[in-house]
Length: 102
Image (cartoon, rainbow, N blue to C red):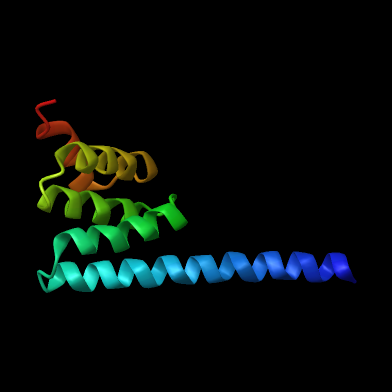
């Protein structure tokens, strides 16, 4: 019975982490949409991307916010990560293939 509870607690922890990631992503999107503090928006987007690094939309938002904040190297890294997760992502593809001078 204890093993079952431990497994259930691990699953519950996993679900909570995903919900936190989604909440952080939502906050970052809202802040971005209303042109609020871009560095704080980056912090929320980074939390989401770290909590669930396989979500291309998290990586893309983080890349766009880093670009807006003038952090070009970090933006490039996350545009590339977006493209690795979602090769059909046109926005990331355009950024990676045509824009970066380094």
